[in-house]
Image 1 (cartoon, each protein chain N blue to C red):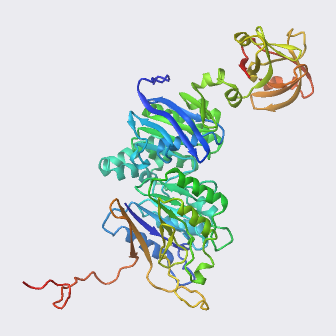
Image 2 (image 1 turned 60 degrees about the vertical axis):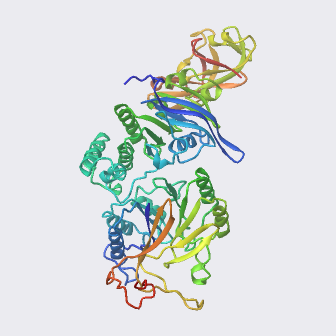
Image 3 (image 1 turned 120 degrees about the vertical axis):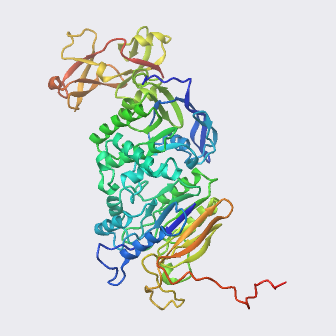
Length: 361
Length: 274
C-alpha cells in the first residue's frame, strides 16, 4: 500500500467540529480530512481534546456544532450503535463470559451478517490474523493482557467497520508487548486497508505507526503532517517542544545565525527571517557534536557537562552553556564514547548550520 | 431491546453454601439458564453488584464458571460484598475508568451507564466527587439519548430504617444530577434484596429482587433484618420506541403451570349472548 494518503477519496471528513461544556471549549473548530485507508494518530498532552474528538467520531459524544462524514455519509447525528465503526479501548472491554471466538463473533451475530458457520469462519480468520489461532476457545481470564487486546482488535474488525478507532489501546500493556502489538496493528491495518484513527499521548508510538500525525493542544490541531515532517519541520514552538527531545535557545536573528548573549549561533534558517527578529532556536540532540578541546572545532560553543542519561546504545548529555544567557542543549553520543564527558568536564558543542529550526517567538 | 437485570448473586467458592444454607452458586446457574427460556431475544444482562459473597479469588473463579455457559453479553459492576481489585484481576474484560468499575454501554438503543458505588471496608455506598464528576461528564456526552443508570446501592430512602442505613450516602447530589439530565429514565440498583419502586426526579428507580435470597420485609424498626427463602427473581426491562421501558419480574425457578384460564359462565367480562 502506498504510504502517501490520497485525499481525493475521503475516509473521514471533519468540518468545524466544536465542543464546549458550559464556558469551557474542549474543541475549537477542528477541520480534518482522512484518506481512505489512512492511519492518523491524534497526539497531544492530557486535556488537549484528542479523546473527545475520537469519541465524537464514535458517536459517544455529540459535537456542539460541526459535521462528521464517514465515507461521504453524514453521521453527525447518528448514535454509536448505528455507525459502522470498530473501537478498541485502553482498558480491555471484552465480554468476560464469552470465549475469544464468541467475543469476535458477537458483532456479526447481532447484526445478522451471514449464517453461524460463516460468522465462525470469519471470527477464526480474524483471530488467526491477530496471532490467536491457538486460543480461540479461551475466555478473557485465560488470556494475557496483550492477548485480550488482540481479541479486542479482532472483535472491532469483525463488524467490517468503515472506520477503526483506537483509544490508547496499548497504554495498559508492558513495554515489550506494546512495541510488538504496535507493529502488528500497523500490519493488520495495512492488510485490511481500513481508515484508522489512533489516539495516543506517546509520541514514539504516534511517529512509528502513522501515515500522518495530528498534534493537538488546547482544543486545536497545531500541525497535521507525516511523522518525519512533524519531527524535522515542526510548525511552531509547541510542536517543536512536544515532539522529540531538543535544546531551545532564545535570541535574535543576525544574518545566517542567531545572536544569543555574546555568541552568534550558526543557523541557516535564521536568514529567512528579518534581521533582529526575536526567535527560538531548536536543536535536536542527534545534531549536536561534542569536542573535548576548543581547537578541535573552531567556533564551537563553550559548555560543561551537567548530567548524563544512559539510554543503552546512546547516552544523552545535558550541557550547561557558558556564554548564552537563556536555554539549554543536549547531545546524543554513542555510549562507548560517553566516558570522556563526565559531569563537570569542559566541552565544546557544534552543529551543522542547517540543523537548527528557527521559529519566531 | 430486552435487558435483563440481575443483582446480588453472592457467589461462593465452588461447593460452598452461603451462610451454610443457601446454594447461591446453583441459584445463579438456574437464573442464567432461565434467561435463555424467555422466548425472545435477550440483548444483554446487567448484574448490579454483590457478584460474590466475600470478594474472594475462589468466588470470582466460580463466577467465571457460572458465566461460561452464558452466550448473552454480561455487564458487571461490584457491590459491597465484592472486592474491586479481585473482580478486575479475576474477571478481565470488565471495563473501568479512573480506577473504578464504571462505564457506559453504547451498543443498544438505550444508553446504559454502570456506576461503581463501592466503599472498601464499608456496607454503605458512595459516589465520591471523582465518581460524581465522571457521571456528570458521561451524561453530558449524549444528553439526547434515553439513558438507564445502574449502581449497587439504592440512591433513595425506602423509609425502612434497616434498609436505609446502608444506602448511598450522596442521595441529594445524585437526585440533582438525575433532575438536570432528563434523558435519564430509569435508575436500577440492588443491595436490598427486595423488589422496590421509587422515584428520583423524573426517573423511576427500581431495586431489583435478589438472585441469591430475599430479605424479609418488616415495618417494625425494632426487628432485625434477616433473609427468607422466598423465590429468587430478576427483572426484564423491555424497551421499544412506542412503549419506552417496561419492566417485568421473572422468577428464577419454575412453578406449576401454565394452565388454561377458562372463560367461566359467571365471568362478568363475558359479552352477553345475542
